[in-house]
Amino acid sequence: MAKLLLSLLFIITITQNAKASEKAFAILLSYGFNANDLVNVVAKYPELKNIDVASESYQNAGEEFTAHLNLKLYSENTNEAYLISKKDSIVTVDKVDVELEREVRNIDGQIHNTLYETVLRETDSVKLANLMSEAFKEDFTTTKGIRVSTLCNFQVEQFFDNGRFVKYGNIVSASLVIGHAVSKKILQMDPTTFSWMLLPENFDSNDKPFYAPVKSSRVSSLFQLNRRHPITRRHQPHNGIDFVALSGTAVFPAQEGEVTAISRARAKGKFITVLHDNGYITTYDHLKKFQKGLKVGMRVALDDQIGEVGRTGFSTGAHLHFGVMKDGFYVNPIYLLKSYCFSQKEEFENLFEILDEGEE
Ligand SMILES: [Zn+2]
Image (cartoon, rainbow, N blue to C red; front, side, top):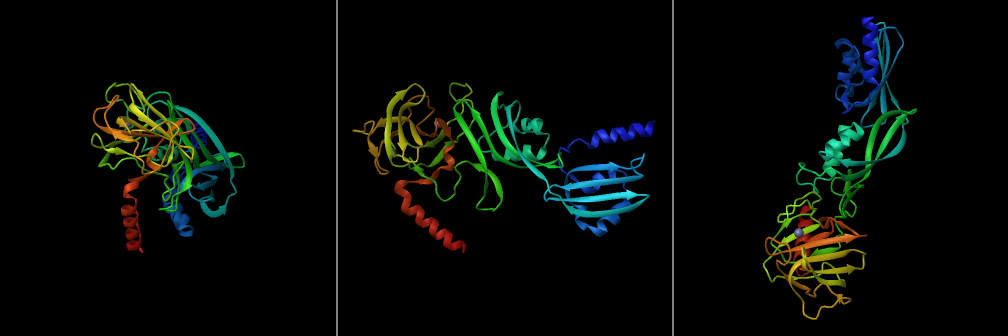
């Protein structure tokens, strides 16, 4: 009876998907393989010593699970599986290619504690929780206090062997939305590492459409979906990036376009918005002054000053708050913005050319 219970327990345990991929040895030991068996297994496939196993399935031909056991270990990183069987103390092992069925699963969730915990709860996968946390690390400078109800959505590949779940693949796309800010990542080839990564929707290292709007010494605050406003203390995503600059510093459009607003609001202070040919709208807040003669509907060029840095509206000091909108949502400007302004173009582009040549 005790033995029957034990094997029942085993069935229950092993039909669950492993949370994190496990090492083959640990799994084999848990099925009652002994040290001598492991030596035999590794003699044929040395990689089994270190391989990550996504999940396993087994068939138990005997009454007792150690008597005649067929075990199938699915590799985490390849489409291979190891068929390991033990019958009457004789262990055999084979490697086979498995043809897995792929499905993309859509997951909608709300963040409760951390993004990591939310993904772990939804998928039971440490790998996916890590992937998501990594992909959004620039949007969350802290993992503490992420607001309950932040919407998160992602699409993840799932692989099956004859209908049985084997493992998760890549996250194909993912987004977080708070208020009117959205941060979206899409699976893309990272040109620097040549690996597939979840990168911002508009990631393109060589072709950022916008110039920095001011000649600035530093950026004081980045785009952040989770932030308390420094003055109002209310939860408020930071919908743009802040450039620290002296009051009166010239502000230029990030790209040529049409002025769509020259106005004043309680929080933003004096602000300007510009619509660009690529469909993006850029915003320039807390201005001290608008450029004389600037009118809504006017076309501005890259070297047309539009205003001066100030501290109007809710602002702790002189800075330019720069925002970028697409389709009604604020997006993270950092991926769209060159690190220099238009007047520094030649100086910087020459510098990059020199650096590139130096690398070869
Ligand atoms: Zn700001």
